[in-house]
Image (cartoon, rainbow, N blue to C red):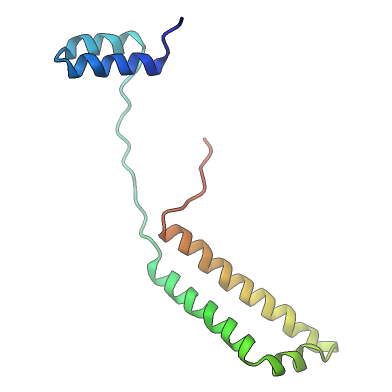
Length: 116
């Protein structure tokens, strides 16, 4: 049965905890494991303010569309050049809501997995 890298690290940890750090170092040296340079994790500022602003804009847009239901229906169903209104409204609400959702996920710490 082959000893895996995990097993070697577990064995080194056990020797280290037992008061034999030199043996632990020898085990890790045998695995060819090299010390990794500590990487400085640059933490970007989280977009709290823009999340709040976009959230308020998103809620306001939804509120105005649904509270003015009759006006929206009348204008959006006229046809002709008025066909721009539903398209513009959909694009605006979609953009604002999407930007809010993206910023909210960033604030919550949920980021896409970065590939190497």
